[in-house]
Image (cartoon, rainbow, N blue to C red):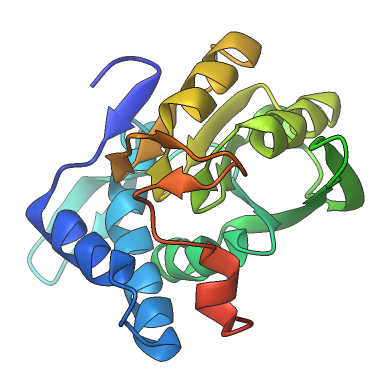
Length: 210
């Protein structure tokens, strides 16, 4: 692990990821595994959250018990595949504020084009976690982080399922202050920008659109 990259090598994460990679895994199972693995990854991406204490009564005694400090964090889904990670993380942190960034890739220029942007207020006072299953070229992720910073976010973390070395390098160059948490770093990108060996198109596999 480095300050910029945290690969979560927990056995349950790796086991579930292997099943998700398998081309024979059906849509319903893929979706359920993505929800489960996102909760496991959420433990890592929220590590180091600010804490305080509050006075409570247990059945036995009074105590000063640890509790999260500061404003509720913001989860930002990079549409559409980000919603698969979002659902699982929200189960773990149901009080989080939620936003959405819609980007698609122009097939001629290969650059991201924004079509939707709706995020919570007060991002400057919140931990912001951007979620997208695949960090491939990094172009869409960098564009999404650009938009979040323009909206005031200063404390951002990026959560993904798979990352390619090219995407990690692109993010580090553009946003060295944004740590990446991922389940695996794969070998490379192919000629059309898909992660190899990867797991195909996460959105298509999650929603059964191919």
